Image 1 (cartoon, rainbow, N blue to C red):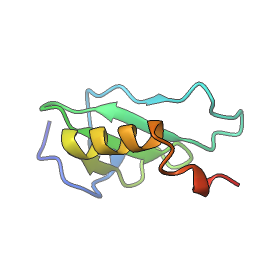
Image 2: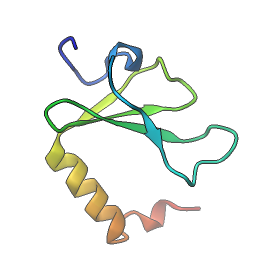
Image 3: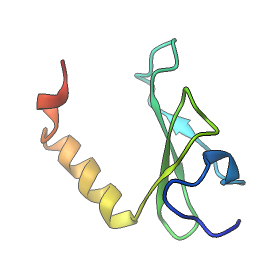
Image 4: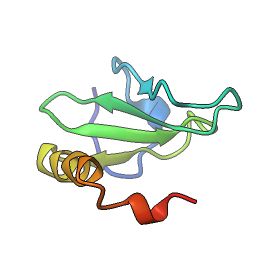
Length: 78
């Protein structure tokens, strides 16, 4: 895999397995995640699978997931 950088085209991340939440709707409006070599995580918009990927470190993903579990982002739900 070539050098992984934030904002690179998600289609350039070869050999990763993208997954989405089981809560994703049938219209494809969701975020997909993929584990990266070295422990990082890439995220992409499922409606634009070749678009930019956001790249996060293991510590950033852990902080986000724990924040979601704690309800830190519940105010963002409509």
